[in-house]
Picture 1 (cartoon, rainbow, N blue to C red):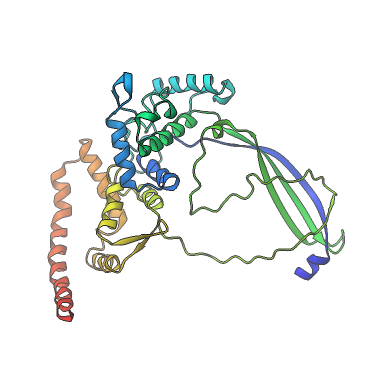
Picture 2: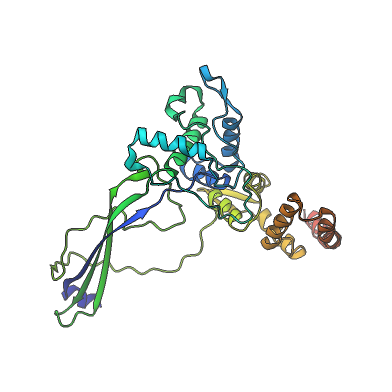
Length: 360
């Protein structure tokens, strides 16, 4: 094939131009704030929550006194108050112009399993408090996190970005009549920046890069002959899934309905503090201790260690909190079988400990 392609002629057979829109991301929830602060700022989930707590509890910003700069930071809701949206739309119009405003204020729907809508999304309490205007009152960490929250929220209320797209189909062969090889190349360039004038998400390190974006193609037309400059043969093999980062682990916990906004950071902190995992180049790698603990727990507590059990228990606890379920029989159904498993596990695991002591 390569030999034939080197001797082939290349003919443009189709050129398709179009437009596509890119919508802004929703305002932050606890999990998305932890993910983005990890990717963009290098903060652990625990550190992010500590700084967010300071911003929420209040910062002395001079004449205004101590002000809570953000809404409650433990939330899985994407709800935004109409008052906050009105204020933000006025700010965007004054700062960037009416073309940067969508026709209607966007409404974001929460996708997280078992999400609770008691709070708003994480947003600045006052959009008019621009990060740079109050920077002198904030520590470096507080400023960076507040700036991230402020930009993400304001961008979430702005117009979509618009891209010009171009797709070119090319046929190759030894002659125009014999051109069995098909190639396709795509590119896109920004036509209208929209929300991107203010904020763009950090790319997830586990996702493939979109090579089309920003690729500028020459103005080609059907029937045009192209010159071959080089052939770059590549072979792709299936790669194993990458190790979790703190960001991707938090995202997975949320997707499976494991835990709540208040437990994501402590969960990650505990497995690091107990040295079940170690961190290398942002990746969480199981230690020998972690593997042993995992093997023992999955062997003796297969049901409890199934993430579906955890998600189901979370749902039942939500039902108790909402008054739809009595907590006594619910806990009784769980605890009596668990108590038996615990006794059996203690008897089975103790000899392992004894052997380890003898070995030493």
